[in-house]
Length: 133
Image (cartoon, rainbow, N blue to C red):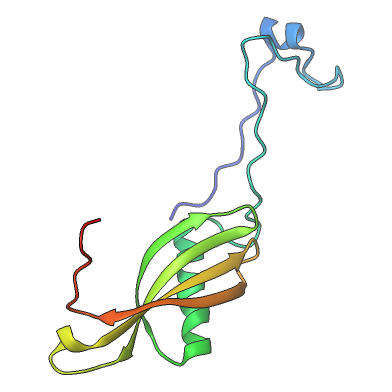
């Protein structure tokens, strides 16, 4: 991964003066026009930079609690407080693999990357295929 590039400073233009943001920035906040949507505040992810880091964090911390290595992370999504992931774990290894007992855990990770909660939501055989709804 490449190191972050420092932000380049923009040259002030005519648009900047109309919006109230000159070179020194002391002209107050920029004005919105009627056709511009309000700015949305992105959720803070200070400790976890992106879905991949959240996914690794969820899997590692759940592994520590359960004493079993995660098999995969089947989903991850941002929430207001951090991230929510579904982690698949082999609960009972059997031969052949398709008869192993799997479990799906819902894991909540806060914005600092710490596991807040987990819950087993499902147990199934590895070879079992979900039926279409």
